[in-house]
Length: 214
Image 1 (tube, rainbow, N blue to C red):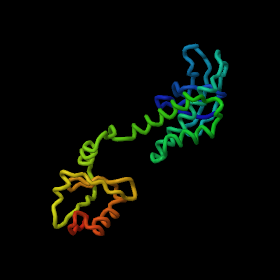
Image 2: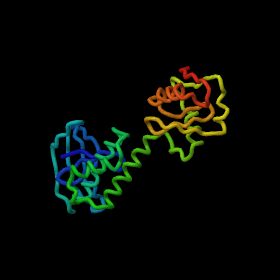
Image 3: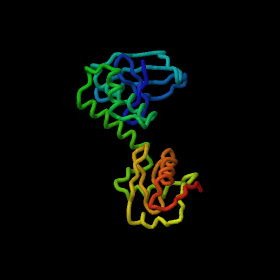
Image 4: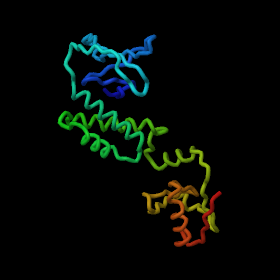
């Protein structure tokens, strides 16, 4: 017996390779679960008690249809991948899928099944983002200008950065890159200190530049 999530995020109880959906809570405190195969009018049902640690009190497992272990396996792998994608957003979807597949009966999964699982991971990750991903540099600057930050870094020096209004300088650092455009730096705080050191060391634009936190 185990609990998994449906495509709509509802709890499903798995008993002997069959899935049951939660129906209602009885006066006795028991939870009634019915087989999800409604098109065949399957009357199989399970009664449980408890919340986190479910215990089966009664059962009627006479199904009028065969179990579908492949469909159940795909659903269980999808659940594991979604959970991992939410817990560790830095993990690549391909690695998440590969790890989940190796931990199950891979003989039941086909190439289309794996492609569907990976698509579900991307959809899950997309829901965690505050909005659609920017498609251009200008959209990145618009998104950053709308973000409220606790600390802001500014670049001050003897020469104004009006040249940056016409030129975009991409400076290679430890983490990908940062884009410098008209007194705006778009990068993570972990790369700001190396960037300031770069300015002080190499004297950007042949002028003395000081980096301060405001």
